[in-house]
Amino acid sequence: MTVEMIRAGDIDMAYRWDGTANGPVVMMAHAMGTSHRIWDLQVPALADRYRLLRYDWRGHGFSSAPAGPYTLDQFVADARGLMEALDLEKVHWVGISTGGMIGQGLAIHHPERLSSLTLCNTTSLSTPWYRDRVAERQALARREGMDPAWDATKRLWFTDDYVDAEGADYIAIREVFVRTPVAGYLGGTSAVADLAYRDLLPRIVTPTRIIAAGADPVTPIECAREIHERIGGSQLYVIAGQRHFSNVEVPGKFNALLRSGLDAFTGD
Image (cartoon, rainbow, N blue to C red; front, side, top):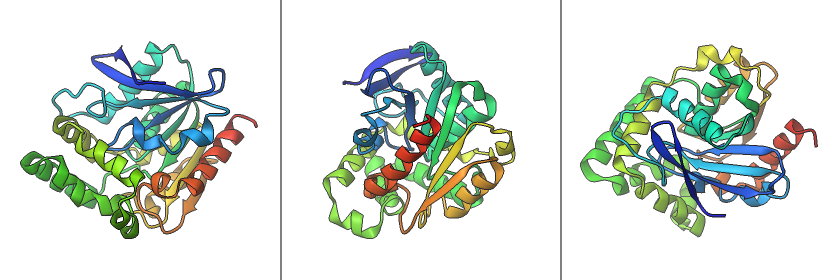
């Protein structure tokens, strides 16, 4: 299927459907500087059973990129707005990095909209290091554009060997990143710099699986453990030796954890 557009709140949002028409709906949210394409390697592992809704959040991909800064509350409202525009009462949420932050916000404030929550390589609290990194990347993007911002980011997201190999999947993510509107990137990074969900996590009652990368410098394993400790009944799985985008670099390992979790949540 192709990307479609729909009005949700004050922006036009891009989305696409994949998978089986009558399966449980899995809504998938991407990371900063990427788009729905971050999930390309997960679609084949899920499409036989699930109805997959991938979307581009505010400022990214084909969705509107108004001037920022944005807020996490806006991202959560946008996700709800898309669900309402598409007449979806509840979804199984899968979010990586910022997409996982949006999922936490939904589970805290709008639990009635979620059947399950899968949080991938994400965090619940912006640390001083995280805010400093955001400020550095924002300054670089403002001054020189998205290509230098990619060069400053790529080895946080992928292992050195994977970056050096420059394979097709790596290049696809790079192309999405450098085409991200600077306004959208600045607006989005401003939102995550204010992330403060950690103390609210005990409110989450949605069945939750956490997938973490063992060598992730962006959202270190300690962040995943903090989430796990605060969400009652949650499950934590770690992919050793990987950095931030384990779903792209080692899709076989990632997909096995993602699929088994969704199958358990849906009673298969």
